[in-house]
Length: 300
Image (tube, rainbow, N blue to C red):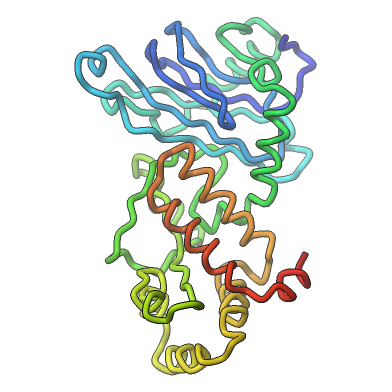
């Protein structure tokens, strides 16, 4: 039961149509009422994913509803962020979550009503009532390395809307991560997931030379770097050297962020049906599979 002393985060999604599917951290429910408000008592400083797919009346007549999309939730590890709230509305025109957050006054009123238990079950569901302890522990283990800094690298932030991305061979391999690019795209209806190209080196050279990630990675190098890269491929330790370079270029020499990217791309594929995430997850696993065991053990 939610009470005024309960801590943690709150996620509200207003005006969702009956029949919509909404999930938090992999646990789904189908909305049976049109006055559903959201989830409360979410763990702070932990990664949460809200996945949503609307099935309004018009879609039941022959369509399959809106595409699946989501909201990412992860606050900075700061005592001032212990009790937080994110709120959005359902947009009947797009049949999706409106990416713009609700005004501050409405949020304050909602939060006050929820924390004082004036709004409670079944309109507001406590996360502890929806997910078992085992399910919460499983989710925590599968998202342990997903950090705020990693989300920023993927142009995501606490409370932003995420839409599945498609893998495109002609997509620019340069990924901007600065705050200017985040604010510039604020008007876009959700953030499409983009990942940097991951090369695969090892095994049959004829195969990895045809790999899209490897080709895009080579195209991002200057002529001197490309020559050094191709020459180094003759060395048995080249896969390990390559991972060191990827760690330095994409992850600031932090193995935890690389592992977090593996977790993030898998989660986004499984729960948002995102093809680009599947491609990225596959390439990371393939790249790491060629790394020498002693190199992995030294970073364990």
